[in-house]
Length: 67
Image 1 (cartoon, rainbow, N blue to C red):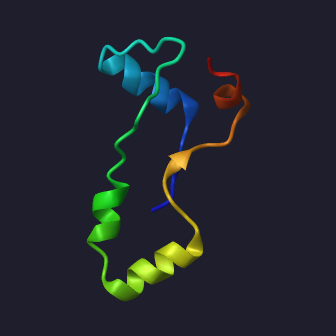
Image 2 (tube, rainbow, N blue to C red):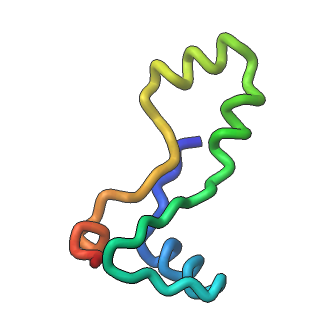
């Protein structure tokens, strides 16, 4: 796990669900990462936590400029 979510994927997901964000809105994305993490064995959870990797937004100018 730990794949970055690209800007176009987020935009397509919002469009597919008929969601139009406005200034001041907060978008919460359900990626399934939490369920995946909770299903790991204890040692795997520690390794994953210590690795610092998690699914999230890809670093891009598009996200920075998104308003």
